[in-house]
Length: 490
Picture 1 (cartoon, one colour):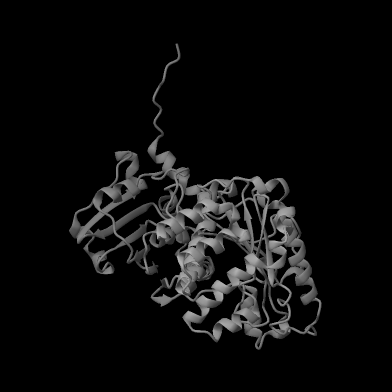
Picture 2 (cartoon, one colour):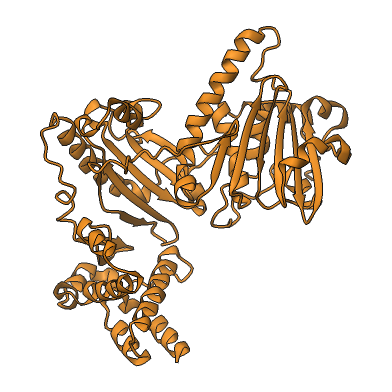
């Protein structure tokens, strides 16, 4: 009869092996910042101290009670298969610990919640003696870190920086230390640029604010912003949003410094390709996923690709959140987008600055967007069309709402929508039943609710709204939910 024999890993050896996961200094710091963002921090401070030989990262996010801190300090404190919060940037519950161990042997966390301070630490030198046991210190031993926390927040202290500082060659280590700080600033400015620009999160390095670097150079009017494309997995549970950009020819930059900055801190050739974001956090950039080789003519092609945290397994996201692989369901779409984008990049790159780039010209033809979801075709007006954007700029909020309601009518009652063209395109897929737990369904229902609210604001009666939406081509398959919504409203 088979026997079960308990085999507990040797603590020191396992923790030491976690130090070799493959972090660089800057990716390790970014992984720790993820925890601050997941805790709803709006201000994050990163400080490197050569004299004290320590790194301190502090935030004003939600602090933790003692029990929560101890649970989160456990190695592997989260199930990667578990459904996570929308804004959660973690996955395995190992990021902060493994990232910290890749820099130094001692990790201490001080946190404040409901007016109470808690702390816990891992010390790899002590693990040999005490095994799998966290160190809890007296409050007065860590009082120097309390001023870094206002009402709530957390401080991460990394010490014994043996991976950064060679005690036998301090001069060389010091130079490397400060070069690492410079690399970290550049990496953070790119990795978290959308949080800085879109979420209003402030990140500080050595006391100075980090300025976001947006790889799509939107401040230059010559940048061509192409329409978004939506791609769903076959089960409808995973959404990918893809948007290509063609950056301007070098002659369209006012200053050489602007052109060099647009190239990125690793240079134009490196920064071409895809930028994969997971919940707005950059995971991978500067890759064509081995579909094409990097060529100078493709330097102007950059493509934004958004995924959500529930797609981690499909995209093979690793602990470091620095690698990803294309899942099968997006490959055809990706290959098509690559072909078109590199061709457009080559056109602009080889123009030698003679091409005419009136900001309204390239996108004039992109009035309609065709989307294919689980074999079902829908058509939508390009909401980012240059002329439409200009119209919106001239309207107040009430006018924008009225325009949005009218555009919804145009989308659903255009001649090709009511003439049966889309039904022909659907074919057998027209009988497809949407999984109500899928992202596809949730997205459509959310859109439906938004449009219904707009129509109500414009003075439509509940009966008019019901009748109109039941006839809308894009929402015919949602008949029951339309009836349910309008009955609840009544």
